[in-house]
Length: 107
Image (cartoon, helix red, strand yellow):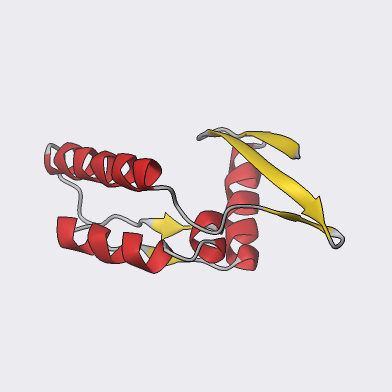
């Protein structure tokens, strides 16, 4: 087993996987506990957005939504809550990260 800790500006993420056939294999599903925590979080975000004059929001599903077998189930449940999630490709995600980084660089 191997582990990777991703320390990002928006979240910390721990990934544990097993090496096999020249790649790391990870769980292919969002666990039921994480699934429910995610929906609870989206419900809270929805309530917070209602407190402000938000004209539009974007909810983007990144790598977890690309690699897990039950991502579509989560997206459907989020839609029931009133949150529309759009999946983005790895390339789209990289472009968005790059755009975020260059806007914070001083000239």
